[in-house]
Amino acid sequence: MSKDVVRNNQGFVQTGLFDSKAGKEPVKVVEFVGQNPNIEEPEKDRFYVLAKPECHITVECVSPASRFKENEILFSLFMKSFEFEGCPKMEK
Image 1 (cartoon, rainbow, N blue to C red):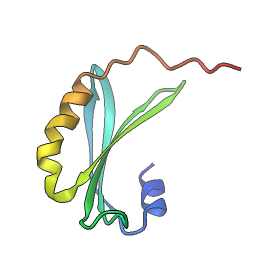
Image 2: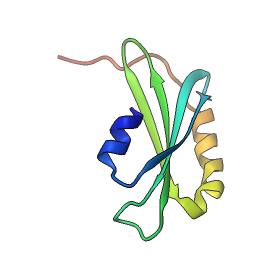
Image 3: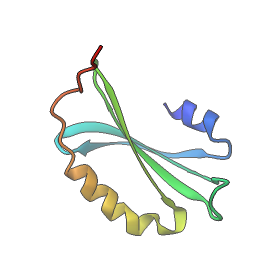
């Protein structure tokens, strides 16, 4: 996943990789910093990745880099409230 984000977002670099929780579920967290052409200042992205054999869920939290610390509180509260009750059923 990290290589895909960097390849698809020129100018972004990975700045962190650690374990965390989304609700009760263990997740990998990957962080990036880079310049998005749509905003004036660099942005910081945090991806929460829940990978199960039957599905893959990624939650992306994005903020201007200068405001990431204050927005991190909201990201954390959101991820603590996350409830995983199984992967969605794909209808044919």
